[in-house]
Image (tube, rainbow, N blue to C red; front, side, top):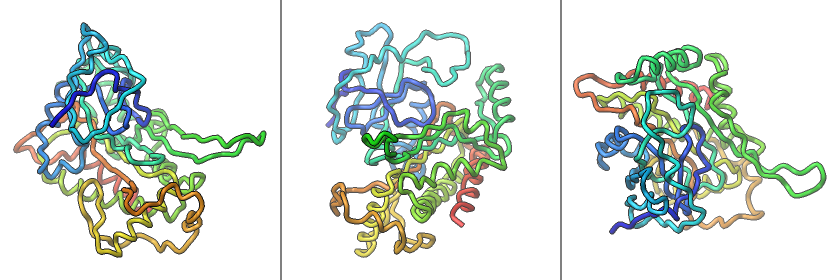
Length: 365
């Protein structure tokens, strides 16, 4: 059974760390609706559920057709989403704003892209209390074979001036939960995220890029202690090594794809999630990461330390039946992705993945 998600059920998406403007969601927060070109739709549709790559990319739930000539109230009426996605909409966003006229290539600088299509994906940040989000753009070469010369030159310059060229990746953006800070005037506590835009990653060098990952994973103000952070990184490495293995067998090219990292940024909720996992482990249940089951292993440190200070007060519903989220790691952005039989794996992409793994290994040490 399927149902339509209409214009009145779309709201602005506020958990993006990087990328173009115009991202939408449904009111439940379960869907991530991204304007895109047909090439990205085509790529998603070639990845079948039983593909080895499938667990490492977002799940496609539907396709949205936008028309500049349509009634805005009907602009989002063509999306089909699986019936288990709960969508009750308020605060509509004018979907016709996502459409602009076709023109000669000019840099978008993160603005809305020229398209009349969008894809609906399962939202990787759903299910987290305070998601921390990091976007890492992969590849020393960022342009596809069909890119105009002006675009090639711009992206080559960008790669040369950042860590993209030497390391095969750069930090494109991130946001981290900073916890609640007490007002100097004695008023109520202020809650905030810290946002790092694309310029932050462009200033990082081969020698300093590790600091970017430290900023993302080590957020003690929000209760994410060193011990908790290393547990999260160890889990991220499980996923990245699995992705590396899959990509080494795939014959494809993905230019300007990204790694999306999401983990629970509220230290108390993160601690509770690991405690619930420990209870599952006691029942010999395997860990599930990115939809793949893994046995418990190594590297996680003993929990009998400061992390247990988060135990009894204000538990926020520590219910063993509640599915607590720890992290998601996904390969995203396939506007310039294609299958290339006979050409071997995408070493341009893998170069970045391997260097991210190397840096995270160092942080875990």
